[in-house]
Amino acid sequence: MRLTKFEHSAMLLEQTGARLFIDPGNFTTPITEAVEVVAVVITHEHPDHWTPEQLRRIIAQSPEARILGPAGVAAAAAPEFEVEVVSPGDSVEVGPFTLRFFGGRHAVIHSSIPVIDNVGVLVNDGLFYPGDSFTVPEGVEVDTLAVPAGAPWLKIGEVMDYLAEVKPRRSFPAHEMTLSVNGKNIHYDRIRTVTEQGGGTFYPLEPAESLDF
Image (cartoon, rainbow, N blue to C red):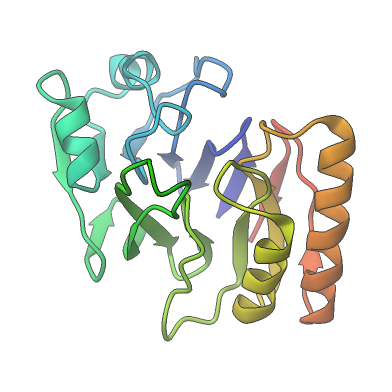
């Protein structure tokens, strides 16, 4: 399976000719190559994780692609898009991809802001992306973790604690577009340190860079 990172939270997974997008939002360059897409997973309804424009571009090239997300995404995307609602504990087979869902709620940003639905997704028992949360997938030894690196709902100490608990074999950064260049360097150094302390390797992927696993 090949992973290609896009800006912020968007990523593309490819296996045996099929493609899977996760979280193509408004911090991500417009997606123009979207043939053979079997599914789009949207972890939650915030626009930095999905937009109608990004979905239209994908569906225009892959009209049979399934869209999966929690109930909040289904409500936000209706009536233009039909979203298959997934919840923590669900497992879905889409082409060569097995998708398992965890978590359920977005991390708290502030007491004045409602907490919305959010699902973390485990792809082919290899890649885990928690969306906007620090969900630990119970009973799973995470091979590759997409680590939220910067957001209004996190501080780097929490990211480090999360990495120390999950102990992935490999990690790479996601949700980084809220950081300055200097901020990225600081946060990536912390992520690398804790990943290596757990016996793993950190890959500081930039947009358009890939990782095979």
